[in-house]
Amino acid sequence: MNFMKTVFLLGLLTVLLVMLGGYIGGSQGAMFFFLIALALNFSSYWWSDKIVLTMYRAQPVSESDAPELYSIVRELAQRANLPMPRVYIVPESRPNAFATGRNPKHAVVAVTEGILRLLNKEELSGVIAHELSHIKNRDILIGSVAATIAGAIAMLANILRWSFMFVGSGRRRDDNALGLLVLSILAPIAALIIQMAVSRAREFQADAGAASITGSPDGLASALRKLELSVRRNPVVGGSPATAHMFIVNPFKKDFFTSLFSTHPSTEQRIERLMSLR
Picture 1: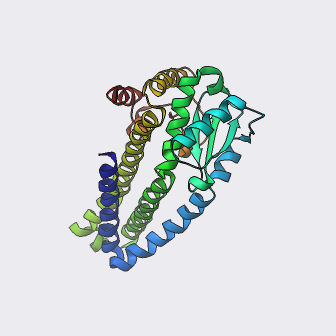
Picture 2 (picture 1 turned 90 degrees about the vertical axis):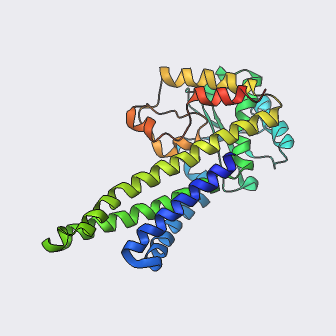
Picture 3 (picture 1 turned 90 degrees about the horizontal axis):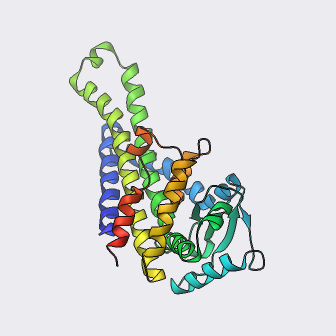
């Protein structure tokens, strides 16, 4: 169901792009800006692991450095039929985890020092399995595709707004021109909402995958409860919200706007779905 939802949402993004591009320069206009967005997001996708690991000062660890963590990752990777990912620890007291890398052969699983102190072995296994599920489902690639299309839509919308500002006064009064202005404002908002919906669908999928890999939803459900409580008590105020989708829970301070465009389903929803898998 989550797979079909993702396909449907990506299809909506594509339709929105083609419609908006058609208003400016037909299919050629849409393709031009799609290629620009593709180039920008391809570079981000290809070097995402290096960018994010540097941003959060993550350090690689070997089996001798963190034997229990390394053992958990190796065992779960074998269960998931995945190559052993590189393992990193982030020097951060707030508990969280993320996966990155362009494909399973170049994957990274990173955890913070805080999560290692907070969770027991069963809970940590649930979290690691969630991240491995992201890797197995190639969610980084899917996220990059969604970002590419949404980025192209945003570029087209900007051109529409600028063209509206510089057309003649007679054109300004034209109903069609006014409609295009409204479209240029609403289209990127709609694209962002759809992109976030894709991200939320992939989180549900990764949760279900974690339960399958570990054989039980209980560990991850318990971990999510602890992580949500930790974020409420001590959210990240600075940092880069653009990386929020990578973490197992959104670590950033939430308000009405960020909740509306959240990359994650609510923790309550996630736990409820996990418990239904028993």
